[in-house]
Length: 231
Image (cartoon, rainbow, N blue to C red; front, side, top):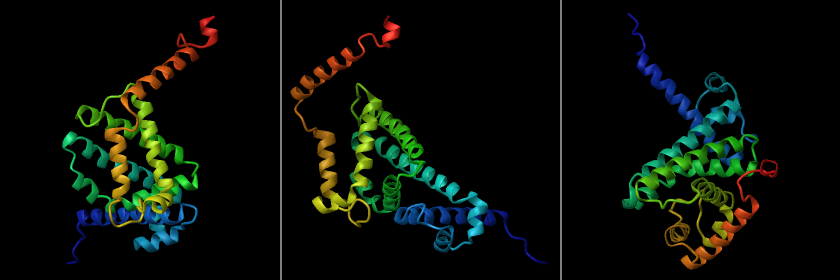
């Protein structure tokens, strides 16, 4: 009698193939961009046939969408786990995970530089995720509340994305590699920690400038409506 294959083993093998394809695509897209990477190259890296990629993802663009989703969801899980620790945030855990997530950082950097027509969808999803884990950070006592939570999230998130885009200049000026280095970018992390935790300007400066900006906001729309509505 011929032994029948275990369906669970088949499912696990299929799931493993899907993950290998996705991981290979993230690595190659991060190195060469979506347009510069062929399905054949992804198939060779993953050890599968191009037909299997089409079977699971439909097209190269379908694979890109899956990669975008995986990158966004993975970073959301990482950030959420971190902020839930509150003020007892474990720096050893965070720095030990840097090497593991290098391919994701390369993928994001290349996606932003290439200016994919779909990059807005990825950015919007990641900003939405950033709002979620920042709210959790506030609830856990790790993050200070903000007068304008969404604006703060957008600015900080885009600052971080800008660091990835300009990673070569960080390497040149600070001697840290945010994309390919094996060691934690200590000088970068020290500066970010100081900016986030200690601030840059003195409290008196903040109050002075903030009062002026609040006045400008009121002058631009004193009643919160359009000119037609106020008439």
